[in-house]
Length: 261
Image 1 (spheres, helix red, strand yellow):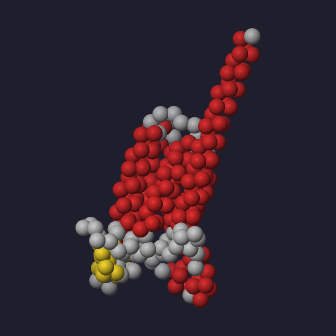
Image 2 (spheres, rainbow, N blue to C red):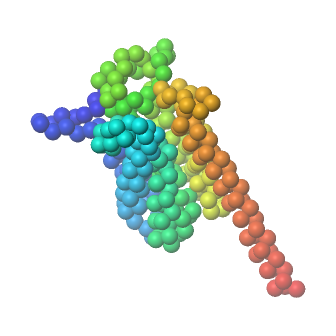
C-alpha cells in the first residue's frame, strides 16, 4: 500500500488523490443525470460543495465519536489524515444537496434523487482511496485467497485481512447502476433517495460484520447503528413519497370529475 507519493521533498496523500477522483466521477454522473432530465444546473459547483461538506462532516463525526481523545489532542485528531466516518459525510452532504436543490429550482428532494447514482459512484471510488492508503478501513483476518495485508498502510497490519474497501466499491458501483436504471422512468419525488438510503445502509450494515471497527452497542458498531437509521429513514421516505404521489393523483382525479359534472 502507498499512503503517500513522494516527489522530492513533497508528499501527496493517495487518499486525497482518490477523493479528487471520486468527486470527478460523481460530478460526471451528476452532469449526465442533469442532461437527461433537462436540469439547468452546474454539476461541477454542486459536486464541489458536496465533496467539501462530505469531508468536513466525515471528519467531524469521526472525532466526535472519541470525545476523550479529541479533548486530549484536538489538533492531532482534527488534522490527522486518517479517520473519516461515512455517516457524518452523508448527513452534511445531504444538507448541502437540499440547499442546492432550492438554488437550482428542482426542490431539495428532487436534487437528492438526481444525485443518488452519483453519490453511490463517489462513495465507491473514495473507498479505493481507503484501500490504497491502508487507513484502517479493512476487515478482520481471513484465510480467503484474496486476503490482503497492509504493512505500509497508515494503520499497518501484516496479517491477511478482508479488503472491505473493494467489497464496498463493487457494491456501490452495482447500486449506482441500479439507481441509474431506476431513474430512467418517472418516480415520485424522494423515492430514489429512499432507495439509496435503504440499500447503501444495508450494504454498510453487512460489511461491518467483517470490519475491524469496535462493537459498542448490542454487538454492533457505531456505523451499524447509523446504517439502521439510514435504512429506516429510507423506508419512511419511500412510504411518504408513494402516499404523496397517490394523494396527488386522487386530488387530480377528483378535480377532473368535478370539472365534468
